[in-house]
Length: 295
Image (cartoon, rainbow, N blue to C red; front, side, top):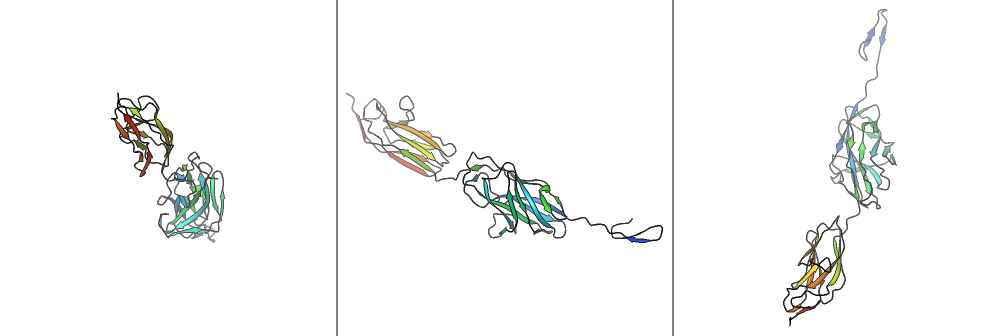
């Protein structure tokens, strides 16, 4: 027999036309990264593109009818309101050119985001797709990360062969909503009178905490005073730093006294609590206190 669609001649002089089925086109997948949301995904935020891919056919206009996005752990109660968008370019971040696709079937399981009953006509020009989701209000920093991915085997295009390999997305951690940076002092100071040459016998104190910070809290008393994180001992100084961890400074007691080197006289003013990178400066007022002459 000769090639497909040609005439084959046999020794008995009969003539037979043989037609073989032509191979379908090849559809190539490629990963898109522009406009994809960074990690972590923050609770209660919306319209985050979590995975993007392009699909290009070698010939014709084959129809993509389904695809499944794999997830490394369950996305249930983490990703909500999952949507599918197409775009005229390869970036979800470009304003005005993302169009939501509707009319298909969607299912969210412990291991997949399943898109079916699609009628997406592909062509020899790349077509761009983005999977977009809202982030559930219940997620926290302790929520297990989710990594989306797409493989050739999980894409269905009628009569086509799929190539391109595995598209592996970001391994998404989660976090609570970022709040407004704050420094929160509490408590009212008392007078700390003393005699020259001796530090105040009974220090006064207040507490301070911080939230949603990117910088540490530096505490500085007015002239004549010194501060410490412990009531007694050698920790007193003219400045103290409270280090933030994960944006938080836990409630800390700050002790205040007049220093043993402070000269005779009356002293007052504000203790400043500053987080420089957060643009915060909070004052705690001291009570007028005196150093008496030593007899």
